[in-house]
Length: 125
Image 1: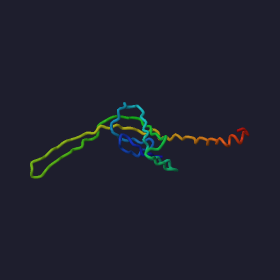
Image 2: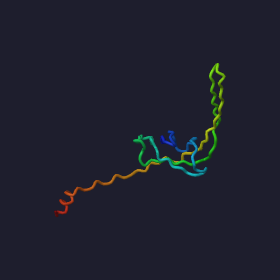
Image 3: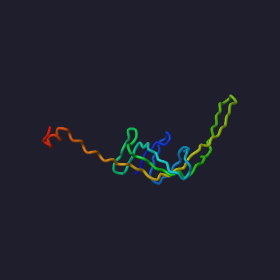
Image 4: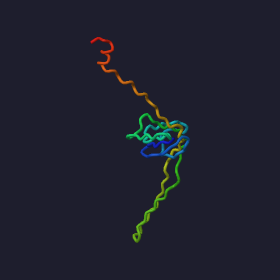
């Protein structure tokens, strides 16, 4: 079973017990977070595609740690102009582990009886 979930503007394909790095979350390490913007859900039998989100589907994750990713170097140069710039950047991230992918099933309500059927059954008008 896997799901495609939207976490802070980025889409991730997640399965249960998988660890992924996402953009920095405001919660503390050890807390559980729930994501309800599930775009697609595959349970090995059927595929549910949301429009834009799958109804009653949630992904629960546990925050493992916060950290900083490796350094990315940005180097700019224009030839024959004497222009050179070197810059570095380290992105903050949160490591999460997907605990559960859940779809709450709702029962369909029984169709309401028409007023004419009720009158016919009772024999009164």
